[in-house]
Image 1: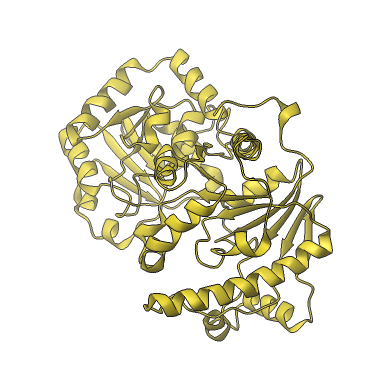
Image 2 (image 1 turned 90 degrees about the horizontal axis):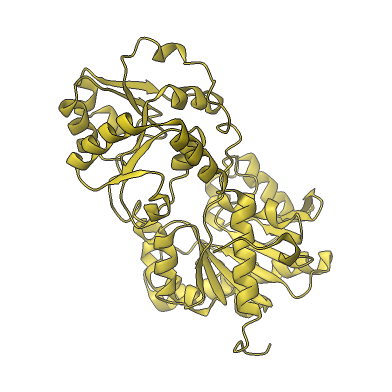
Length: 412
């Protein structure tokens, strides 16, 4: 979707965000970045997921759980102002832990009960803040927020898809039936990859690809970053990867093939390993170098020391719709990138070498090494810069306005 002029952005609206990740979880998330961007022009209530009974029992010593219990007991106010126009809310009611229930009728009845509790506590915060005519933005919370459209009666309801959740057993059990229904009854869906937008479009014609925002500040204009000490002795050319080394996402056999096909190349892997990587044959291959996890602030130095960057994804239901932020990090430093071709990667077609087979990878790495140029580096940096949260949220705004202003939309 093309960008809108700033004068046409959604402004002065009241937005309620629900989702999978609470504000006080330390790791970053798309939804928190989106909330911050929303709050530049609108009032935003970011609702944490409600505490469930099993978590209260099993994790009662956790400071985060203690805080939620204090809110439920009435000894702590759950509505907190984060910054101007942005509030975080800790629900003051407990919900039941029901995902283990396999009987569909019983589960649905209890899930509706949980949704009613959740909706009532959200209404308290909405009323305190004086929110009106709300936009409900749901970050893939397909269970606890399944009935919120009916219960909160928003002016417009938005479902945000950023991962294919149904591959994971927890979400698959009830999500295979509930997520398509939730997508279908939402006023619109927005997705951070073309694959997920296509998936949503199967259930709702008002489904839009809105891109992915990235915080690239630590990578932009860092081409002069010194080479890290543990990279100095590694022979050139260096073909590198930065990120978690997880066998569910990365192709171990592909990495082995590249290393053995080109023993004169150094394959450098920077990041923590899962048990499959730790036990793999890759550790016995002389030209593969495992450097371990690193401080995030040092990653630009590693990427800068690579001659070609890799994203050797294995294609499965976890990865096929995934938008890999690391591609933008590589491109922000002007580096040539070789990655696995998937539908979600199609947006990078002009700036990334995309391959399907092991032989493709070897050929494309050779090509990337030989045809790199200053002109190509500048183009990569410029393209990465377009993947900002401002641009992604502008496209969300455009999608909302397109649906709200549609002449055939039923009156509310």
